[in-house]
Length: 247
Image (spheres, rainbow, N blue to C red):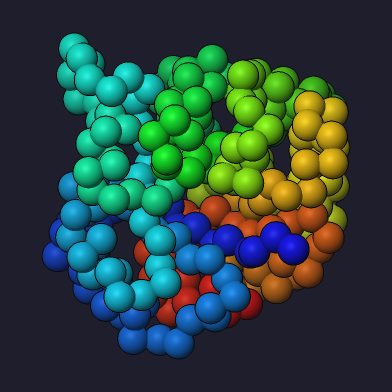
């Protein structure tokens, strides 16, 4: 049985003071203990948020990571640095990183191998653009992202990996894939993992992301292959995020 996972991606939002207020508001509510809740916060918030959630079941995530342990990579953060801050998860290959900062399937693969080697659980993002979907290439695109992203990933690491399917056209636009469309693609992703790892496809968790809100989370989570959500805007409001966890 796969444990549902709801991860909030704060993106470039929340100063330390704002982050602590938000965490305190989330902590004040009763959260479903059968759902894994994760907060993926800006680097500057990590230490403060880790302290704030220490006595809770909430997990901590970063939003990016370099694959090298150290070196001349100005502005980057290494897995060793994240380990020292006791980070549980890291988002890799988000569409905004691919679009604005030239992330590729190859760099995502390097980062995923490095994260796993350092005991950090990666949330690897995949998804198609609106143009690719209109050309009926969405499954081709996503399959290539999976195959390239999982190069040299050992089968024993699958239980520590989460995949987030995020159709790029639905991120921050207010649009969302229908629950059936999302489940169809996530089922396809699971079958692609099956081509690589056989029956172990059933242990990997696959989230949906793209304008997930309290009013559509129940329908999404009711589908056969959707194991959670990677959430942007709705994770910035305590009431909304709590409703997602307690779907």
